Structure formats: C-alpha cells, structure tokens
Amino acid sequence: MEKTVPNFTIEYKKSLAASGIADVTSFNDREIRLNLTEGGKAIITGEGMKIVCFEKRTGEFRLVGVVSGVKFSAAAQSFLKRFFK
Image (cartoon, rainbow, N blue to C red; front, side, top):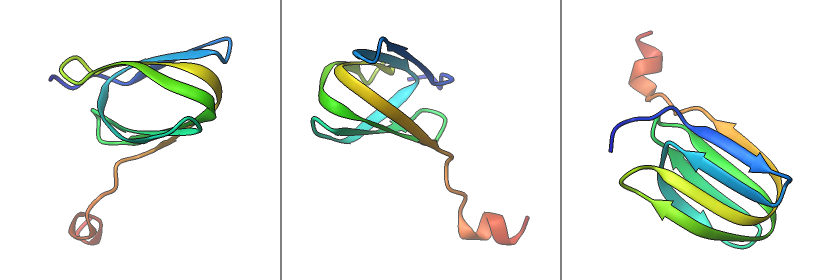
C-alpha cells in the first residue's frame, strides 16, 4: 500500500469515510482506534458505530453510527531521534 495523506469525511454525524488508514487497532460501538499511513493515530468516538468497510490494501475505511468526535495524534519520535535533534 502506498502512503496516502489521510482524509476524513463525516456526513451529518451519521457516517464517516476515510482514506490513508493503515490499520484498525481496536474497536467497539463507542470508540474506534486507527493507525494512519503517515504514522499518526486517530481515535473516533460516538455511539452505535459499526465498521462497514476496511480495505487494508487501499487504506479505505467507512463506518456508520453516531460520530461525536475525532482526535488525531502525531507519530511519536524515538528517544534517540529527539535526543540528537
């Protein structure tokens, strides 16, 4: 899979479509955790969420349910990389 800039689209808080997803690390109906192809992470919160599509090869992801928030975090740098900066 080639690296793609992650793109998230939320439609009326009832569905979410995303690209640039590397992995789904955990999920339940209230929280879904994703690894992004660019090295960061995303946490999607809501209610009654259900993954309807995840194509690891292309990085495409879709869910349905009430989406209340999306949090992003940058990729963590290694200790040595920060130390020798």
